[in-house]
Image (cartoon, rainbow, N blue to C red; front, side, top):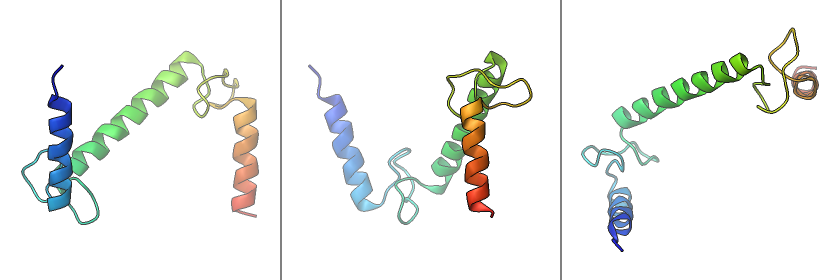
Amino acid sequence: MSDAPEVLRRFRLNCKKRGVCTHCFSRLAINGLTRCRHCKRAQVASQAARLRRNYLRDIAAGKCVRCHKEPQQATNKRCVKCEAYHYAHKEKKHP
């Protein structure tokens, strides 16, 4: 069995220790993080696109956008339980 994943893991740990980006291995990482600005910006954009895609998928399927299990209400994108939680949390946050 190949130990390539172990070698890559050790290499990433070494990069992290020396402050090099663990994604592209070519630029210095941002202080306190393990990625450079370019890779971090790309990760944020990718995550935003993924979240939007999942949100639209749930709406099209008629599922609750919070719990992804129960069907949504006719006038809302959340199920009854999640809607109740949302308004209770909102009242607690903004009395």
